[in-house]
Image 1 (cartoon, protein in one colour):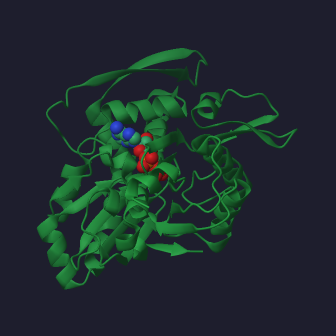
Image 2 (cartoon, rainbow, N blue to C red):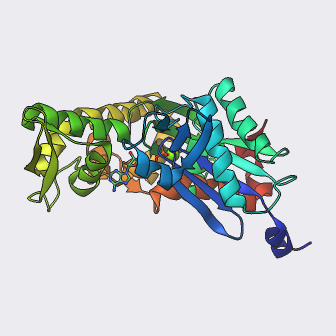
Image 3 (cartoon, rainbow, N blue to C red):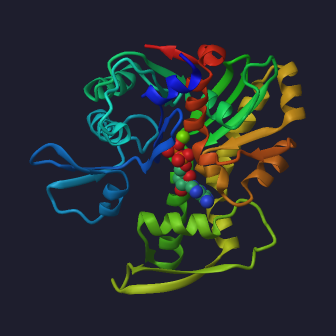
Length: 343
Ligand code: ADP
Ligand code: MG
């Protein structure tokens, strides 16, 4: 059986179960699902009424019996049952009518996942018809592979994956993690800092999605040429209870998120300090690689480079590194098998 025969019959899947976004890759088809990790549950019936983008639209807009939640928000699987329901719906969507039995599934999981959380992922797989061949890969390894780092060589690489709920910092060599740390400070905390600032300074209440927009449009970690940009923001005045508009600058946002950003950099420095000298030398030569949506925060690469003295790169498609990494392991299984673990 040739390579293409295998692909055309294959229902193998690579899954990035992220705190903010879930992505699914099928070899030969590319990414078949890319949706926010959100589920809306009808508590009366105890069933999912929507997942992903559709559920996200309902955030903050649901009747009493419906809960719209991000079950992985705090970085690990905070709501086991809900994660299971969400994942099941996503897998159904991704696989269409195909039966998953006897296909290989590789799931990227945070390196700090507990056995209870892992069990929840397995159960979601099983109830979706994927009974055999579930493997787990640590997200930093998947991210590094997806970012094109030479993970199977005896050289040190540093990957920093900044997601919604967690930042994972890892030093890798020879298909394994030499050192890693996972901190619960990432994109969500940056968004929260913006919300707190607007409330404190302008008595302005804004929703989650507006805060995200502000972060993406004028969020900044380090001064750049377009520092004069401003943004008009609409929210509710907490004093009068009426709608209100304020204009804020890039610099203001940079200051209000500075402490949060610094915590992410502290995690990087802590790992660098513990890195054995040979590997540290490799990292100095090759630089630090940033992945995850948080890598797109304007100027973050420059700030990290400035504070660590090490060249810092942003991976192409940082939001897709983990899922592409799982895909590469599926497609080149012989070579990369050691990166994933059977259950
Ligand atoms: P996870 O792996 O936890 O699901 P992702 O890698 O999907 O997380 O990244 C999601 C995070 O990236 C969110 O906090 C989101 O706000 C942030 N993000 C996405 N795009 C940008 C951007 N252009 N600028 C700043 N942050 C961004
Ligand atoms: Mg991620």
